[in-house]
Image (cartoon, rainbow over all chains, first blue to last red; front, side, top):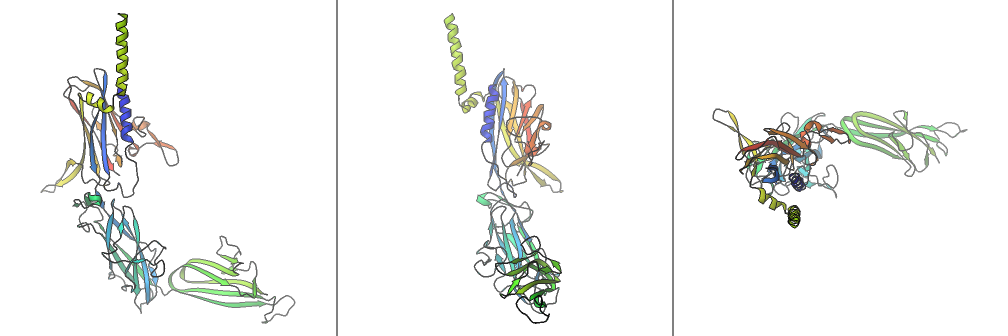
Length: 339
Length: 169
């Protein structure tokens, strides 16, 4: 009985030490792993208990990295074009803090043109102020300067990196151009070493470091495509309806209903993202309720599942087209009555 | 005579009370005499000889990283002069490790596990709750403690060992 009592107490004592934590990249480097065994027994019917030594070791650092191109498709550019970004994600897939050097390569075989390092800078680090690449303005991302602001990532942490390019002139539609980024862990001797190579004392906090399956280096290639995508909008009054009882004609007077027809055309090839159309009505007209159509199909005036609405405060017709793939044409119509 | 009986009863009572308040460390020091327990953590390191033959060699656990399998061996020896019985070995699995399924061994012993650190049972009787709160059979990854209950006695001078493997999370 005493045996069992001591036993439970010991088990409780041991189990309260240390809290459980979850890490995708594994137990952090420097974590001490301890284990102590309890043994209970009886000598001539008298219960006894004893504990073993505590077997202890420290988790070493494994150096691993991944780099993945994030754009869903080749980034559509014009020829020439400036400051166009490829988006990549650098992730520390090891279990310790690690800094990385970044090297860009524009000369990838198998494409039709070589993107040039942008005049504003070849590599930028996302500064977290606003999503996507900003080359200037209050949220401008940070130009990468090797040896000065090499990105340092905690275990499991990620950072968005941009390859920013200027695109040469006189390229043909459909031409592809690739650029790559290489990220190399800066722990001495790690990058390119064989998996399992040991770097004594060079891990986080002075523990040993081991080179992981990635060989402490990663490369990702992104590409541009010359799309020549151009969005044009033309607007005309397609119909004038005279007030009731007045002879039809081209004369516009109070009570005339004007039908506006907008043709929105994306030519070339590629994808235009987040395309939205806003058309404020002239101050002299009142919007005719329920008159919006897109490609001949009626749309409600309120903001809802359909992609068009009329904002009475701004006196504006809005149509959200989203991501459109060129070539494509949209026909938007609505009516206004002259005050 | 009656007085003497009372005296011995009293002293027995005193003994029982004082035993309850002896610090645990003192209990060990006093009882360590009979069974000695050693706990060893090792890793297997592959080495290739000149002919390219790979052999696994055990080394003390070092340069352990997430995914490394650690072999824990508990060696116990009866260093007393009397046989020991009712031997029960309890191992709370180390934090940040997962038990490797099928890696637990111990000669001549009943092996049970716990998922809550309180109740022990054979794997077929252990249950845990999944994310939806539904009771499902526990797996090796759910176990937090291993218990070996040895059958029979450990004679004076004899040793025994139990073993399991755990992977660093």
